[in-house]
Image (spheres, rainbow, N blue to C red):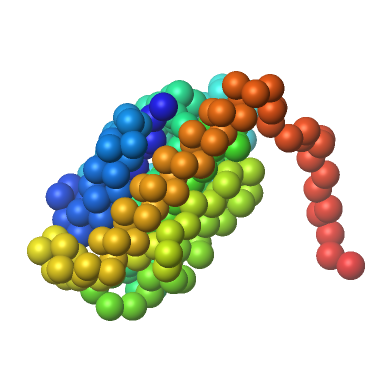
Length: 207
């Protein structure tokens, strides 16, 4: 079983990476394979709602990381999406990335657990986590929690490591993620399938 941890910061080994790395260490101790998938510093373009992915089976803008990630996501068992906090919201690159990944490849995420992690110097973390959690709930993904909000604080990786409560929260995410994916796998082995999915209904007006 494999968990992909997405680093939504352009800083490859910064505060967000430090939090994700703490989670990955617990997952690996639990016998799960991990990959930290970094978005890096190159531009990531927005979704333009063209709908071409419905015909192509992937995003029409194939020149960046989105289609590569979705292909990996189809083989993964769970996800952690980490972001730095900018003006009380997730990084713009992560949001552009997730808009396209979930719109073009939503089936790759269904019924697989997801966790959102926010890293901030001080504030804006809960608002950022709330934004990321909405991707999970629209895609039928179980949401993974810990023993407090999924956040760390610090302005440098060294300061994040000094946030002992934050590091404990990250380890809790790893423990809970491992438990959930193992439970899902055990359920499959016992003949428990995924829930029935009704044909989607859209109410395109407001009463």
